Amino acid sequence: MSWLTPTMQELLLEAFWETLIMVGASTVISVAIGLPLALLLYVTAPGGLSPNGWINRPVGLLVNALRSTPFIILMVAIIPFTRLVAGTSIGTTAAIVPLALAATAFLARLFENALREVEPGVIEAARAMGATRLQIVTKVLVPEALPGLIAATTVAVVSLMSFSAMAGAIGGGGLGDLGIRFGYQRFMPEVMATVVILLILLVQGLQSFGDWLVRRLSHR
Image 1 (cartoon, one colour):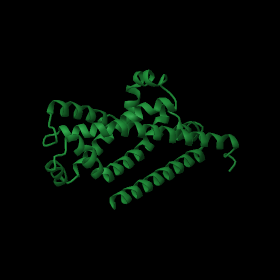
Image 2 (spheres, rainbow, N blue to C red):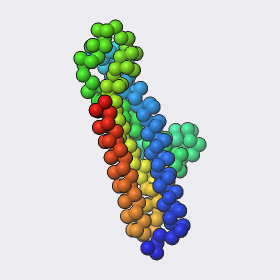
Image 3 (spheres, rainbow, N blue to C red):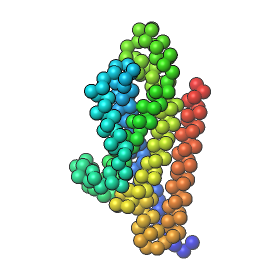
Image 4 (spheres, helix red, strand yellow):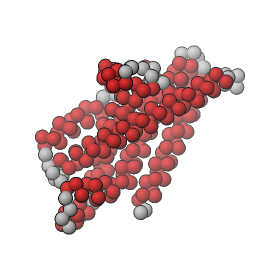
């Protein structure tokens, strides 16, 4: 493979780690923000632990607005915000901002659905025993929904892999950027094929690990 020079190997390794950094950091941020958002939506929904339409509707609209915006448009639209947060609008660090924002809205709805799957009888039993709203959320709701939350996170991480590749279109770094610069712009199909294979392997590995974790937690 004449194209796989030491320089290209170094570029592939660097792009691989950049992708892992982008996906890893944006996943941590989106889970840290998305789970409280999902809990807020669940608790304040009609029939929830503390129904409040004044909170639920605006938060729901904001989440839906972010979810319905195509990622490539979102990246461009929030460039000023990205520059404010990351100090730059290009590169791996800058790509984390729109990735985290898109994944947060996506995860908030997936987490909310996972929380809704918890048996109402379990919540009622906790109420009957005198548990407070906070105790119900932290000691009943989240633990019972944990397999669903893990499954939702796995789906989001897989989506972030494709989003991170798309971020390469505007200089976001990672495997997507490498594939565009060398595979497309310099007419090196071998590089493009290698990038695609690496992304497939990453997705398969992450999905398998997520499925295994869900099965393990479901048989507690």
